[in-house]
Image (cartoon, rainbow, N blue to C red; front, top):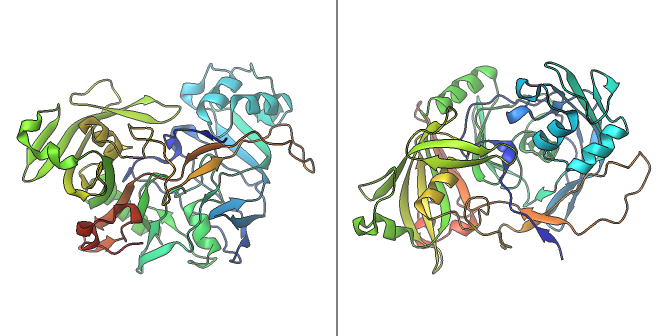
Length: 421
């Protein structure tokens, strides 16, 4: 039987998150069940020192659509990064295993021993102690990407002179990270020829890989800076949908008791306090009503009951006033009503017809080009998404964008608000 694995979605930042400019310049390719896509020319480094793409990536990769999943055929790839301050004095193996969780520890042990991980261009041992600014290059042979859901072409919500607004499916990140490079939003948009080969797209905000919904991509640097600044300053009014465990309506009753950092106002619950990271390796966060530690960041979200989705689960609207990493998920857990299938924050790891579990690939360090893989162990299964969707963004310039509600959110009162995807 396949193994099951809870997942924190560490590589991808917050639900409605912090400003980032990770524009890409990939060329589109042929569509269909198999297609090729040119290598991105560059990619910005991601959070917590995750590696960026090097120039020695493949010229083309091949997509295959099978069983409702989009796969990428194995390819050789160079990951490059410079040593960060917090890595200084630690061993190469320790940093690789702890910081770059797309590959397991035994993979890095074998790759370092084989000379596929170098420091300043030289092969070293696993015990090599890192110094500030050194260049680490990891040559991944027959690199494999995790599959993502494929439900047809990614929906374009609206296109203006400056913005391309799309409805991102769950399971794929916006920009390349971890075990997702060609199975990322911008790469797939180019593959399906939503944008021309010469067009440049810049990301203006983050949206978790496991979260679906609106993504605003800018066509110019000026638009990216302006919209990104609005997100960073919390000037964009955002509405999310979530499906949580229990009857959320009961929380609105004053007799249900008080929680730290929670107030009731005009039919809504407001959670206000601080969020801080408690596990950098997996990217997990926690809430406190008072600031704890130097890295605690203020965060506030309002919640509104919509309707019961089932006897035991509710659909709620979420109005984040700030854009912290995993903010909505953490606040719902604090309320005691976690997102029903968010196994990282109090929900259940479940096989759902709308968001099935999908296999997590295991990288093989021992393979040279031309060799075949040994029979694989049972795949570890991980979630393709959670019941959280970015529904509406209202911008300070008066423009507003709304995506379609996902199937899991369809109850009578939601159906009157938006149509199903």
